[in-house]
Amino acid sequence: MIAFLFTQVRLSASQNRNMLNQEALRDTLNFMTDEISLAGAGATEPIISAADPDALQFNGDIDGNGIADRVRFDLVGSDLRRTLYSSEDGVTWTQVGQDVILTNVGEFVLTYYGPGNTVDPDIDAITSVAIRLSLDVAATATALTSGKLAPEASTGRVTLRNRLL
Image (cartoon, rainbow, N blue to C red; front, side, top):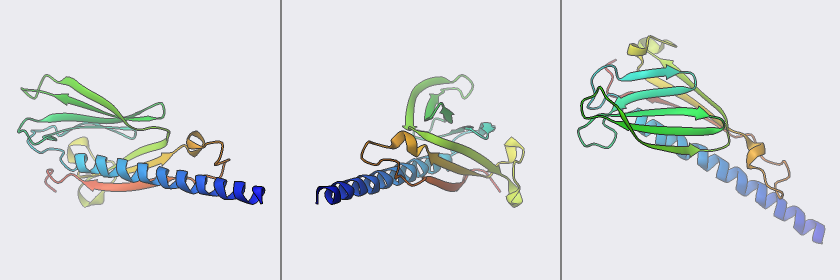
């Protein structure tokens, strides 16, 4: 009977951890796509200043105050970071914040698309971004989950609504 109860506790712990991992990926993708969709709002070219497979930096009025901000998403170690910069003149940028928005990231890959759904366009022609995120489930395991975690990955794609197609 005790063995059965212990098995049920382990199963419940694994299911809960899988659910938490899925929720973390979903929330992170939603947050990123909401901000990336604002790229270019209240900003002049260049809208995107860095478009690498593992980093995206863009300008846009993120907080709606009429002043362009600069946002950078990048992976440092296994931490997905968001760095926010502000500028009064659009030339000189000051870092005003940096947050880790997801830990234990196994994979963070950005793919860029241009007009006609072309892959890897010129940085000035990017119209949408695909984001692939996965978690290092081994890093999120606990003694009770005992290696019974499902691989967690999620993909999203966002159109820069302020970039003319």
